[in-house]
Length: 255
Image (cartoon, rainbow, N blue to C red; front, side, top):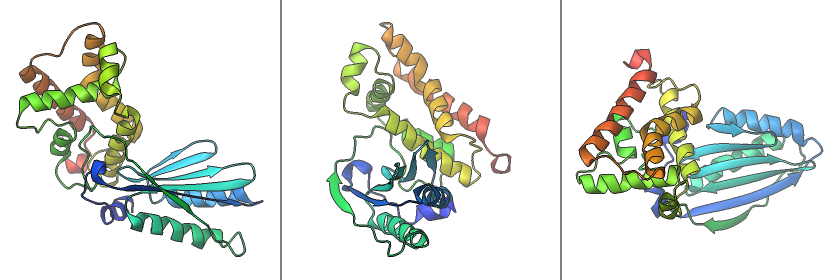
């Protein structure tokens, strides 16, 4: 259901070109703990979720998210979206389930426009890209670039955003959000698991592991004052990391 739900509503437009909106609503309920669990269980069955003690965030694809926050006396709902059908789907689900607990339930939404963060990974739109994972990962990390100089520039942006420890890397990473990029990569990996292409037990851990294997050693070298290897060696190493990662977690039935 995860795979089927996400494929139909995602736009092919790159996230940097999409207009994003944030809608927020809240309600007071004496039974908010029980309602929170009902809503959390429902949305967990539809979307990849990161659960915390009183907050749950559900990834709707790309930069689109739904957050469910449980306070001591209220519940707060926050949807960040570019596809209005995503927002409509969330509100329909909220209304249909909350009416069982609260008489006359109706949410009043406050909506504002938000600027999407700059992304440096070329994540597929939609997330249920049908090509083999090796080819998609080549695109995600810009290794499909015909111009090796441009490929190296984009790779440098990845290292800078994910490992901004050295002064040089800090300057080059200021426009990017490395943690969001890892979360987006985890979204894509979770879809590969849902389709039984890759066997991904923990998408966030797997995304961090792949990123670390590809860029961690290079970042340490640059922090120590070194530089990148020559372009041919650099691209060959990164492509090798992708093939090693996919080979290690490919589902047996997809092999």
